[in-house]
Image 1 (tube, rainbow, N blue to C red):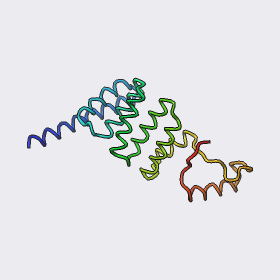
Image 2: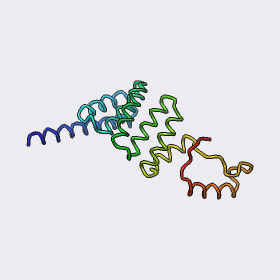
Image 3: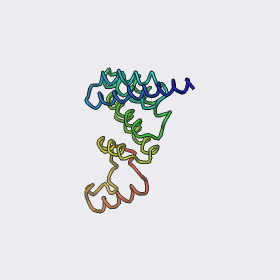
Image 4: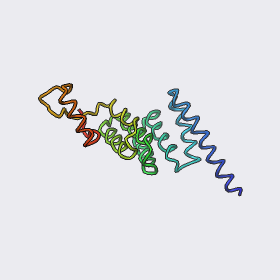
Amino acid sequence: MSNTVSLASSSDAGMVEFKECLKYMRDGHWEEALTYAQRALENGPQNPFYLSYTGLLAALAQNRALNAERLCKEAVAIKHNHAQLYLNLAQVYLQAGRTTDAIATLEKGLVSTGRDVRIRRELKKLGLRREPVLSFLERSHPLNRTLGKVRHRLMGASKTTH
């Protein structure tokens, strides 16, 4: 019985630390947020959210891209169907100037998470678009717009940047 209480309080401690992390992060205080994320991770070393946010904050606060990438990839491996984990990994790549890797990560996230709106929004911000169906016409031409919608319905999201 005391083991159960001990596990519950350990997990609760991690959540308390994690909530503080998110509060500091929201306010743009990366170093402070990282401290709380690391404390949460100590309490829950296999929690994918603690791993992911510790990684993201390591990139933002200390520019530790390799460590950040490792932590975020580990989080995605544990819980591959949660959009925020892909978004955090993509942000680490963007912080390191690796836009192609960020886009590839977000595209994988779209498949794994059921086309999450946050991932689609991030891809749109990165300028992910296919070539017009009929390249000799403007992208805004009604024929290109109609054919583009049909192509999107048939093929799904874009795999190239333009």
